Length: 257
Ligand SMILES: NC(=O)C1=CN([C@@H]2O[C@H](COP(=O)(O)OP(=O)(O)OC[C@H]3O[C@@H](n4cnc5c(N)ncnc54)[C@H](O)[C@@H]3O)[C@@H](O)[C@H]2O)C=CC1
Ligand SMILES: CCCCCC(=O)/C=C/C=C\C/C=C\C/C=C\CCCC(=O)O
Image (cartoon, rainbow, N blue to C red):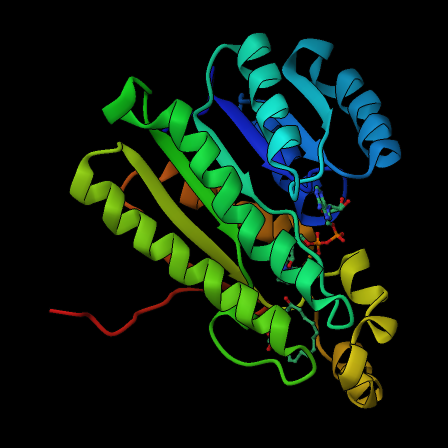
């Protein structure tokens, strides 16, 4: 799938992995609507991107993915400006075991909400032109992280939702591919502010921070490079791509017959 002329929506685009995804999509010729709840970071990133790629190639839309109304408005603005949506990257996420309901709301419920909203515009069965949806899960979507059970549950949920949607899309002919990316530790603000986010598991903070300090971490650009493969390689559907410092691996799962 070549990206020239393609229109992408990226959530959590203002910093970290979302910013790297946005920059790589732009470098490859796509136009991008950046959705983020952080207005200050989003607006200053838009200024940077205007200079690098031209004002017409991006939109910053202040949007909390927990709000159905705000997502709807962001999709309408994207369609009004760019005319179509080909790519959705559900990337916004938090790690907060204290505010665990908010973690479920942003990391899982919002992925479902945004995906269903995108289907209304992308689904070939209802007049859309198809495309690809890539969800940012985590290695915590493939195995347990003892310091953050709810974060782990949301990321397992994202992997399951992605794979089931891929199967539903194939069965019904939506013309949309669904993939999940599952990175290990990535150098971003999410990990640097971890200690006070573990709630009842804060007794594991010291051990967790030691692991983080000792482990080699991925750069956001390494994650974005792998995500680009999931966007552009039309053979990839229903995949969970694990990305670690020592390489990437397409995961295999039990098959139901
Ligand atoms: N940093 C890491 O080690 C890893 C991160 N991930 C996942 O990658 C994704 C991105 O995380 P990072 O870039 O590391 O975090 P980050 O904290 O640097 O960036 C997250 C972005 O999402 C935005 N955001 C948060 N809540 C939002 C909401 N309700 N509505 C709209 N935007 C919202 C934030 O404003 C921020 O710009 C998350 O889903 C995270 O779970 C996955 C594996 C590893
Ligand atoms: C192994 C899960 C990495 C998940 C990254 C993430 O989404 C959030 C991490 C939060 C805390 C990290 C705490 C412990 C990590 C333990 C092991 C990391 C091993 C990474 C690797 O080997 O690639």
